Amino acid sequence: MKIKSADFVMSNSDVAKCPNEILPEYAFIGRSNVGKSSLINMLTERKSLAKTSGRPGKTQLINHFKINGNWFLVDLPGYGYARVSKKDKNIFQKYIGNYFLQREQLVCSFVLIDIRHEPQKIDLEFMEWLGKNGIPFSIIFTKADKLKPKAIAKQANNYLATLLAGIWEEVPPHFITSSSHKTGRETLLQYIDDVNNSFFEAADSNKIR
Ligand code: GTP
Ligand code: MG
Image 1: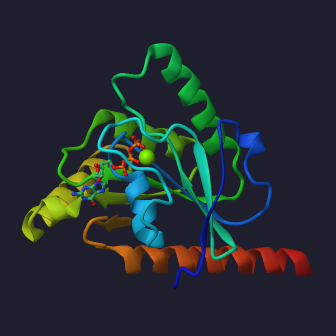
Image 2: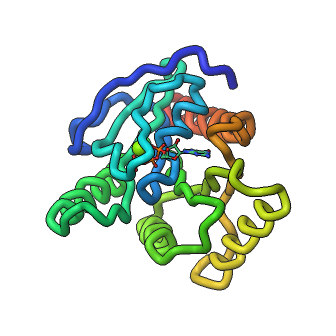
């Protein structure tokens, strides 16, 4: 898929105020600093569409970006950021939780995992929560440029094996990416294109009925 346009639409902390168009949307979630905002910039080939930082906690709100005029990428704040107070964490969890539970046009949540790290409880628990609530997700391994090919495969396989050893009967769709090397860009955009097409086909057949 070619990215012809990528526009910032709005930021807010209330799912009820998110764009009300019924267009397929894809959310990026994961630990602070895992590379969510960088990946949005890599996919759209826009250097600073989403704000990035070397310091965790940069993205604070639900940010909608409209792509090619007919689908959305959504940049979310990270979880697991130690310097956020307990009170702020609860507020965060509530509005992010509401976003996932209430956003009907959310067709896929991308859970980002740093390829260098061993499976962490906070991510596994978050995926479990998505599963329990029937929210579809895929895994995106980030920062693949930091490892050699053999180590990339080993880390990804190890991660997926941990999921299978836990509550999951099958592994979710998964992608290996590097925002600095543009690794995985075409594959990810193709996946999004396929999901978009299914979304619009289903919407069309509902109209006919
Ligand atoms: P929060 O908004 O704080 O939750 O972080 P985020 O997940 O949006 O991370 P962000 O995209 O801001 O990137 C965090 C840091 O990781 C920045 O210093 C990026 O340059 C770096 N980074 C992101 N993606 C990659 C990557 O693919 N490779 C390398 N080497 N660094 C990356
Ligand atoms: Mg961010």
